[in-house]
Image (tube, rainbow, N blue to C red; front, side):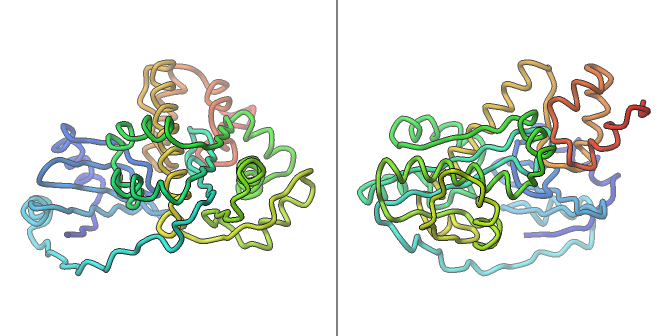
Length: 301
């Protein structure tokens, strides 16, 4: 692996040089992702606007030196693989989209049986975060047919309405995780319910104090997909539906909608407004992001 701090000029060169293998990835702070047989490049942008390029695979050092002759390879010893700590019949939930200005929040809870574990490992779900978008597009239709799950897609118009009612990102997530987990547990009675933790247990239930039904017996775990197969399965299904939503947006607007909330999104927003107008942008985006707030005032042009 090689890690380089880069400027916008190098960013543009990498984007041009590897346009042929550019892929879509839904990962925090990643603004560009390239992947072929011999090289993988992820370009990150932090909150200060600084760029970092991470090169992996066989040609990582050779290619990195094209952009910085002083590039050095970092040798990382593989950590022992973590296996799921509970493989009994269970229900688990995960979500995608909350960090994306232009995409909906999608919450999924999945039900699996103990006898499903070998199948999930065989298809690669035990490494769900490492699955490429192409792999997800291939395997998710099989998973959707085989497994029982509950999905909520909170379109951005609905998301913005909830914000106006006093909800925040985490309280919205809590609301729909609770719905999805409650419905499946009420049907299958597993007594093994897990959630990919995004807030403390106390805060989670505080958010739900006005809900009519609440599932109380839940286990919370950060990076839950690494510990519970039901969360890993939910992660893959949710990401698949996010990719389908991307296809839907492209079909409607004939534009490639970026993930996240980076400068790449800012540039896309300018292009979108020129083509479809500010009102349409506000309608399809999460209005609590700084990328969008500038366009919410009536006197902005």
